[in-house]
Structure formats: structure tokens, C-alpha cells
Length: 135
Image (cartoon, rainbow, N blue to C red; front, side):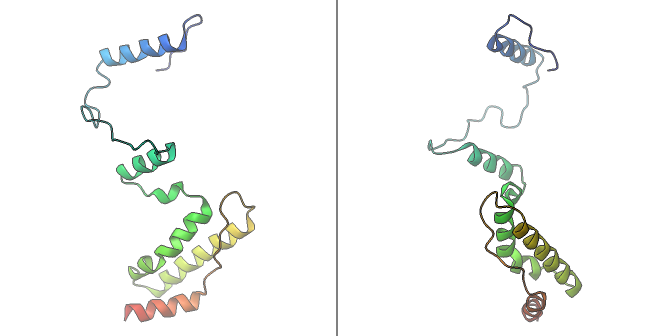
């Protein structure tokens, strides 16, 4: 739809014509979810809840929707599971150092959302814990 709305035509009429033309061309045929009812809501759903559900349904990680401070907090919570899959100590160090840099950067940034309440991790302490868990 690249055509501009003609002057003197109401927005609703113009949109209705566009939808009718697209339907006549079959552009709505075979869409995912066609013929299925919309998911029921309890009336408390917000636009954000819809977005989160849509992102999950498409198989994406919802962490990208979080403010940076919460994304880092989630990453800290997930760190033991993340490191359990790592086989090389050098990679463990890279992961922790990268996370520490993002923690420091978030502390330097003016608060635009929830405050990050985490400090940079002690790399040697994390590596020691990783070694113990790996053995």
C-alpha cells in the first residue's frame, strides 16, 4: 500500500477500500492463524503483554524487550546455567568480563528505568566456582 489517501476522502473509507482491494486480490488468504479464534484475554492484558506473547510465539527471546538494567539482572540470574554449558576457561572469562563491562556501563548511564543493583563480578571467583561445578 504505497498510495496516498486522496483529499476529501475520510480515513475510514480509504482504509476500508484498501482492505477490500487486498481481500479481493487474496492477500489475506493462507495467513498463519487463519480461521482460528483470537486468544481469550481476561481484560487485564496490556499492549506489552500482547507484545511479549507475540515475541514468545515467534520463538524469540523476550530479554530484548527489557530495560538494560533488568536484562543484565536476568543475565546474572541465568549465568550459572550459561557457564555450565561452557567448556573452556578462557570463554568463561570472556563471558564474565563482557558482563562486567556492561554492568559498569549501566552504572555510568543516567537512570532511565529501574536501577541496576548489581556490582561487577569477581572473575577469579566465578572461574573457581565454574571449575568446581565442572568437576
